[in-house]
Length: 83
Image (cartoon, rainbow, N blue to C red; front, side, top):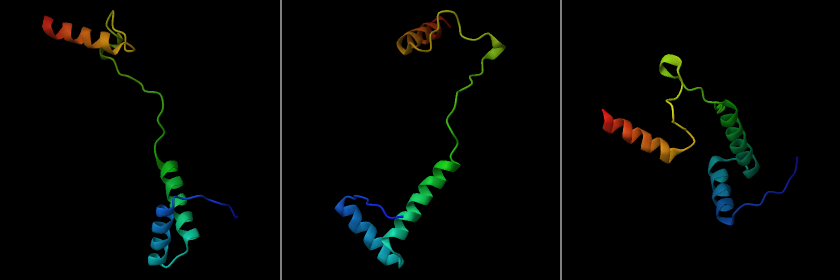
């Protein structure tokens, strides 16, 4: 398939030089790089929903809101000073 790709002139020159050093065409070099990126993406684990483990199965302490980082920090500091 034919298509037009716009590359930064310095990137183009570097890629062309690398292709020549490897004894291949610029097209083959670009195809190889695209295949490598797609394979890496296909093989990488997907980020999904996190499952948090709680001790004793009781969930969060009363008054703890994980969406409020400042409040959570205050709660943790108060808990550490009480000990």
